[in-house]
Length: 193
Length: 193
DNA sequence: TCCAACAAACCGACCGGCCGGTACGGCTGG
DNA sequence: CCAGCCGTACCGGCCGGTCGGTTTGTTGGA
Image (cartoon, rainbow over all chains, first blue to last red; front, top):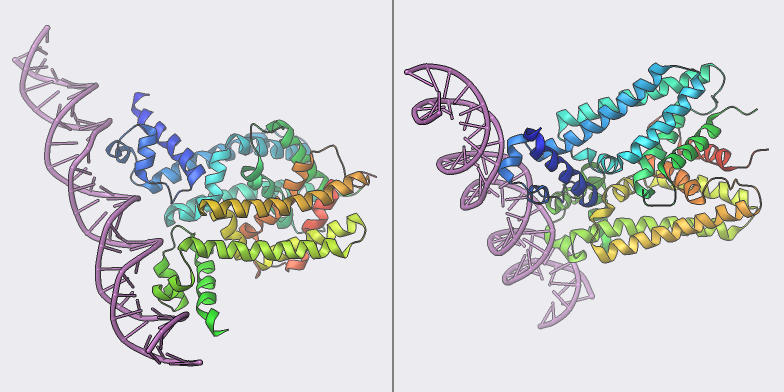
């Protein structure tokens, strides 16, 4: 436990600073000062500044994927599963608001082997969601007159945009927003009665 | 015309590089080399690297605002105006895809007097859109059981996300996508029959 | 129980390199 | 001949990363 204290506080400081100032404009010196450690200590646990960014992404992607798979594994009617997934994705994204901010803003800064890795895992996540939509379409519950890729982009756009407008101290709780956005999304992609 | 040739090519090069590499990781040297001019020439027309970023934002915001006001001034039934606005915003955003990428990714890099200015103009734009939604609600055409701020975020999220997935060389034309996204949005915010 | 021996954790001064910006001089069209 | 236009060489500063050395912890043999 004691061993990872330095690494943890560095990661937290990096996350905060990256989210507020951006990755490129945050110096390693700022990070270690905010974390209360020295550069030497930091470079003992991380190989590069890039490592910090990747660690943030890694944690977020792992958590999101785990959530998605747990819900899908639980089973149920397709539309119910889809609704549960949507609500959970929004709620999780609100929990990880800072990570999301950094993710979308600074992904292009990752060096190449790791950037490819992140893109691939993100794609897998998208594909799993796409499979749910496809299943709903096959069952006749979801509309097919709009390309599936557009439907998916339409959903993830909401998730993506959260960090640009949602504030935990605002009028709505994360659960309310999650249900509202999910409702708007499902209403738009369900076949007319 | 000749006078602005240097300024134009610098701006174009800056836009391309900012969109692909990010603002902070693009050096002034790269920009002037890509534009085929020298640093001295560039600094004759721009005061700082910041100027380039602001010029890009300024052009985009002006164009978007002009479009919105023209459509609103043209008048008509509220829901028709709203549809026209939505389609136009998406189409315009696709035309300015690179600008959008830079905007959302690098806005936090703008120095403060100008950042405030950009945020303010963006807010005015949002407010004008919000007024349209409010009018639709007052007429009973749009639902009121979801906070208006959420409805608005729901729309702008689509616009925002375009630069992350849409490609002009992809299967769908900008007009198709504009109509599809507008349709999804309006369907979700219209009152049930 | 104590100490030698070693490893891991950590420190912080330092480095090469690049970056935004400037100084200044020459060119050139009117 | 002058005023704007542009080229070039250069600067101070900061940044990511390193490296030799010190401290702290741990192990094992007598």
